[in-house]
Length: 406
Image 1 (cartoon, rainbow, N blue to C red):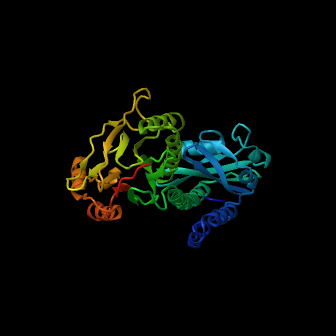
Image 2: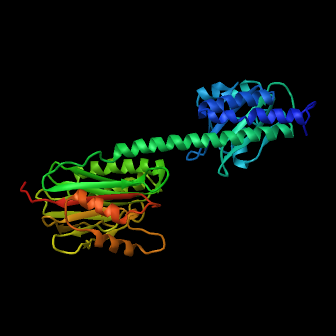
Image 3: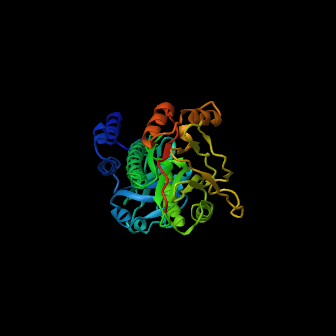
């Protein structure tokens, strides 16, 4: 079914108007703005609007509009499944309303505009609904199958553009967050020298892996390495919250197990659904001993001078975010010989597809030799890091240079 009086030439003109390649040269905001202008003209509509899906809230958010700009200014949101746009997002197919009533829409702005007919289609990207594009007319005028196809074509373009823009924003935000949370330089403290590496394993360039070193008022040195499940901005945000919380708990706890117990409680209460593995160690003021607790994390490696490197026999408690809060966490004290090097790492350094992780850990042990921390880090990354790693790598080396007295 086509618009009265339009032939194949008119239909082609309409398609070209919404599929013009020059649109792709615009930024996302300008692209959506121009696309809505063209859609409104081609479909003879009085209003046109785009609502993008907030995945976590499962709500559609008014993002761009022509004739309904007030929706965007007022930050209009609607849950998936509710009203006209919510129904389109839930059912994932076009909806036409020939006679708009208060039973069909929940937006007071749509009702107040006096729209008589509405056409809306889902916006897709990578096979998933990412939003809704709808148009409206003030005069009764039935939308046609041609109109549906043209609006869907525009929605597909808008979906791809909005996802590309969101991915770019997420990547930039995640990178900025990661850079702000990973130490720009490790502390210069007596008795040890330190070096670290962080290498992202995904296109997002960020993830939930982190390391941290800080001095405590008591003279002890706190050492942390952890891994929040997942990748990208969401994992980086959770990581940042855990990093800050652990630093706070470290100030009021005398041992690492207690600090991790509090952090686990925080995750269960405020970060439900997230999982993290964490190693938290406290190196004594004289740098002679280390107290350590492991929450599901890989055992660190110690390489004393004149001896073969090996994993420290430290009990591994359940990761943060799962298991019972009633089960006590343990901490272990081990000697930290002068000139020894301690290696803390995340699984991206040792895991390989098709082999058990024990093989990778043995490979790491064989590559570790006592020496300056920077030299050790450089050697390990050269020896073990693979070019197409699929997981983030965090590595922290602590070299005991001498013992001091508090």
